Image (tube, rainbow over all chains, first blue to last red):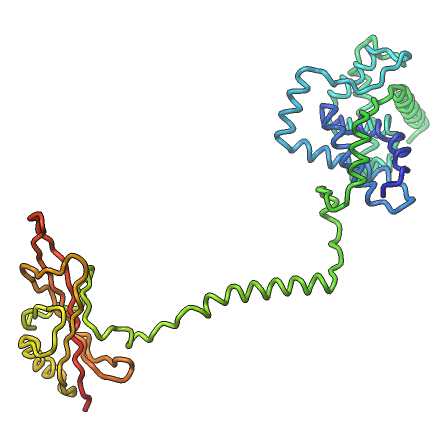
Length: 167
Length: 226
């Protein structure tokens, strides 16, 4: 399926998929690899004119990210790239948002357990409903909602004092 | 759940939604332009190059009759190629008839069978020995006596030409052992008694160094069965 329809769909979801992949993969290059692999797999399974299932897309990206994590060579290269701190920005530059608070949110997210972190990212930045998050992660809906609620509470507590006011 | 708990749950839900809206104002970074190009290249490539687990889980494509015929042809060709060397290989003779009727001079012959000290001393085996040798003829009655049901016929002893540098006559010979293989059928038809004799030959080398070589004499004595 090589019609240009995937371009608009990609523009709408690519940044969210990348942010989700970066919860598993600490550098941008590996996260983009995971997005590429998951996107291509899911889009190819769609029949012509049909849009991919969004939770399935996140599940595919998650699978790709986990596969990448298992690769020792990639892990070493990733550690080298992360060590210099060159690609640690998760967010777009926005003059309306304090850079200090953006960095604080990222740091607080990174300190959370991965289960809570991925539930929060899917709920907050990907905009998925709890049933869709449950489908993407293969978990129970109530479990996902509880993880998200506990994670958000922990995220707020981990933010520095000067960064807790709304953006 | 009483009214107080209900109000608290509602407040918690509102706070959670407020946090979600607050954090959602942070916009995720967009991927690089290269990622779009890589995806476009992947989608334009044939599906067979997809090395992913989802691709592996897809059902295999349906097999056509031509596909099956081609594989059967390959299998038949492989079987024929494997069978041709076996068909071209000469068939081995039966074990009874595989023994040569000619006494060979074998350089690495190892004495086998029981030593027969009662047998006469070794007959020196010239290149060609006819059975008229007195020592061999003397041995013939003993062989006949050991087997009363077998009547000995004219003995026939033939020795082969020694190979290589050992054309010269040996300085001395030492009898090692005799062996009686019993009556065997040469070519499956002629009954004959096969007697073996192992001898150690001693030669004088050109540089004065002695040379020792074992030799095996095979005596094939045709017999008539009663």
